[in-house]
Length: 258
Ligand SMILES: NC(=O)c1ccc[n+]([C@@H]2O[C@H](COP(=O)([O-])OP(=O)(O)OC[C@H]3O[C@@H](n4cnc5c(N)ncnc54)[C@H](OP(=O)(O)O)[C@@H]3O)[C@@H](O)[C@H]2O)c1
Image (cartoon, rainbow, N blue to C red; front, side, top):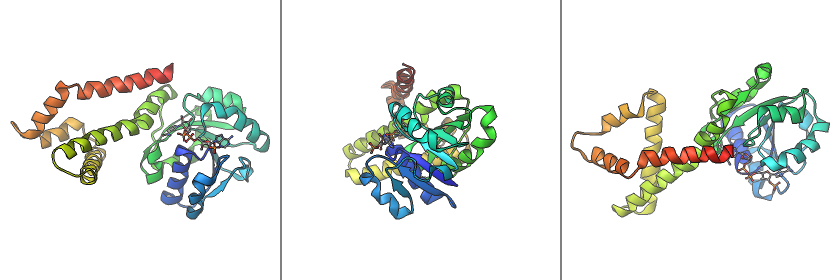
């Protein structure tokens, strides 16, 4: 596939690197106005350019990873140069209906919500599209399946997906930071504490994804009666561990919905 990514910032560059490293037979072009910060992408065989229309007529999918207020400017620039394209947008808050109205019936709108772990082939990319664009969306789904998981969801849940999968990266990192800080208090230097905390989270996540069970089933396997783990867990819950996370996620969702 020829993949044309407009907006080579945090997300756009991550997707480009992920495609180059974790998928085969895909050619990637990334655009932004100032390409200096992403010049290293060329080492991976990625084309970088300031020209949003560079070979865009050959693209199989155009991915928008720009801010919401940049969408109209970019579309005004590229639409006269393309026909019959799949335009996959990661732009937060831009609905399929709005995007389809902006691009016209000649193109197929797909909504994607990846996260920056795409760079490591480990994104949870929620994807939504209208039934009439199902066939056109399949290549995009396959592309993001190569960058982690790519569940197809009802568009009604896209804001929730933004919070759980995109903001969720920050929430998970904050958990790791807190664990690392505790690790320093109990005797490790920060590098060792971080390595242990991050690997422990990775291991826990891998067990869950592999076994597809409920977290409490795994927790039960590491909590000995009267042991240190259950004592720590109960103390954390007393201080609002789960409830603060749930409240934070619901607050993020409220913020998106305005
Ligand atoms: N970051 C995430 O984890 C994440 C996850 C899911 C969804 N999203 C969504 O993805 C979008 C991008 O987020 P981000 O965090 O990657 O933002 P970002 O780092 O600011 O990236 C946006 C990029 O767009 C480029 N750009 C701006 N105007 C342009 C134009 N006219 N033509 C081409 N490129 C242009 C900017 O570079 P120049 O200024 O050099 O042009 C910038 O590098 C947002 O809508 C965000 O809500 C982000």
